[in-house]
Length: 191
Length: 114
Image (cartoon, rainbow over all chains, first blue to last red; front, side):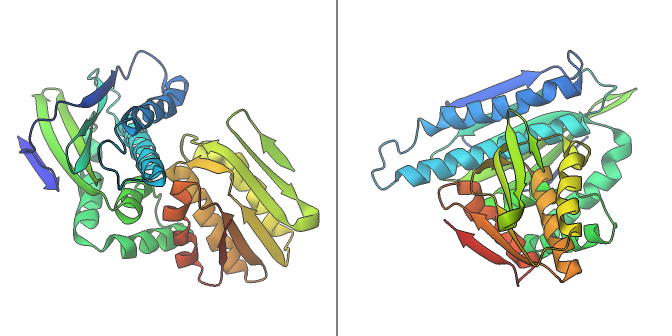
């Protein structure tokens, strides 16, 4: 059974230009692997920076730096989240892809997710998709101050408030016994 | 007082009440940030009247790191005895986007870009 939340576009035109990085969650301990997050994110950012300004002479050097910085931040957060929330019982690979379209960059990060985490994940997605992200940002930090919640959701929220990205999620059950669920987080960054 | 690694450096200059943080910060979650949280708390506990947080040389900060600095701003706000200035760089794109949130949490905070 598939479930889709937020801005998850399944009918985007096929993009010929893209990069995918995939890795096994079990080949290397997470602590050792952590340093590859930055390497992967910066590689994606450096790679796509080559396409800017392209043929558009109105794009300045500082616009290129903005895109590069945004790609680096978003890719890094998506990989960190995919690693943090990956279902450790599942050998399914973690992947991140970035594809370029004429008006946007589209990130997709896929990992398996522990079924016990689904409720809190869905609750958070519900907040992200229904509340004003700028108000939610302040609310979360204030709640955090009183020790109310652990805000590991700040990365996704920052993409919305500071980078004006559109976020969507797809959950797919790919095995029922044991139950293995894949989540794909899609982030669309307008360029 | 300082923490220096290959990726990032943070140190406190008491004469100018300035905390300077440089490099690229992408530690894994709040646990790994604990030494830095302690470092910042120790400075705040000495109750300086003025404090400058100079982030202009910080090229990258992940969301856990943003969380650490936002929490620090909230502590300064709660303490009410320290006037905080945050220095950013207009040449570092993430700072232009994200440092304004510091001020949204604490409107009396001074935010300057160099």
